[in-house]
Image (cartoon, rainbow, N blue to C red):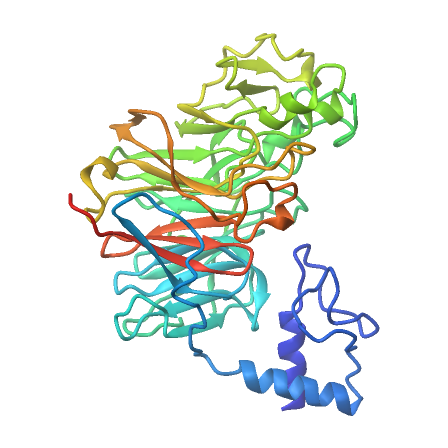
Length: 467
């Protein structure tokens, strides 16, 4: 029992930078490892106190099911008239993307291992729209998660794997199969979200491990590398066979599109058979080039770009960015730009819509069900996580917006759909936010599920008004 508990603990304690298991002399609770509520306990495997702690920890987490502690009255967000938001689950861990099976089972990717697992499986057994069974499994942590042909696909920072889903079983059995590999570990923009088309292809975001491809990373005045060598392996969308095992990015993988800094929000629109992403725009214009940009410009620029992705498309990073205030693409200052020049911009595709800077788009979903009013059919929901780079001005985002579509393009302006996640009107730092919307999924009944990355709350939003 003691050995099993020790292994369980070591698998569980990994921070966001994946430093590995905690060293014996390191406190279990720290800024880097905020998993435990008991402060001052050290990992001394030979002390009786540590033994008791490990034994209790193991016994309390070894069960696969637990009740849902969420208070149904404490919803915490607002939605439009006619809609109702309820809490499906709470405190499941730092949630990322989520997906829902045809039987209603919900699977959530985690950024940090929780209770020994990087994936959470949730089931509503009694039909009250709250999770009754909550199970953690899987040794990897990551962001991307989807169900495709009875397999649960999961994207860690370095690989995409899949688990076989057996009918009736909540948790997959057996070891995962590796589908896309060879990405390598990076310390920034490493998430591997993905989606599938209807022809057996999987599209994976490979973010660039840089802000603007400078010679000296994030250094004031440093010029950009030209051409940017990162674009050979990063900063784009790679296509893989959805079912072939052990495909290497620079082997069997195909670079489908390039010039995309980081697209955590990625979705295939089955109504028009097109791929879309919402890109995280570059940071620190005022810090890197204070003679060209002030704090207000830095807070609003550049746009978070909503892109329609075509095979072979090139979308401008790092040489340019889109200025939504001027309504045009401009040359980046690392490459000689002054905030107005459009030199070499004509060769890159413009976004189909531009959002305010530094809202951090982290998921994208096209609504194809019938539970919501007809005006939502075919439109896009985008979850904005909220960002850090607007300081010293207040941070923004922390909402879910809706974009109406007519065919392949937006048919009107975006509007806020779900709000109130942050918990207060003025947020100086993202650490002040009560919730941060992260992932989106639609259930078989047409309701919209939203995940939170702070405490791991999952909301269910459905329509109760008249059509």
